[in-house]
Image (tube, rainbow, N blue to C red; front, side, top):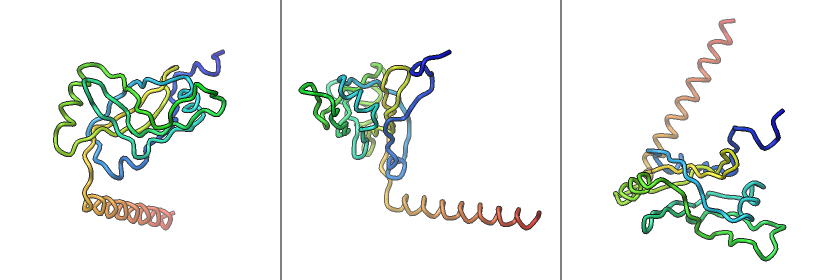
Length: 161
């Protein structure tokens, strides 16, 4: 019988739902994140937010910026700063590639989700390009057309039986 924490499945702790709305996601990466003990406990309690956060590559290191992890309630004087920058752990080739890509005009690194993998907390990053206003309109128009098509198909199937 497997123990409670030994499942191989992943569990999302925080998801950036606005990312697909505001950005074209070009490529995804998995990164480890350097955390303190109270940060891990707070994340596992679901007290993390990726809203308005991004990743930056500085001096051959990747950093997660503006990710809010609330202080741990039972944390005492060892508690962490909620908005501190946290180092991301990536392979050198990935860091070099991301550094080169983010120097291009309009490309940025957006965290999509915080999740567990085994006993570790990981971050899914996406290389992204910001959407223009007409892209939002086009996506809304496409969703409306798809919704109307699905409704028409369902109505047609209902009348056939």
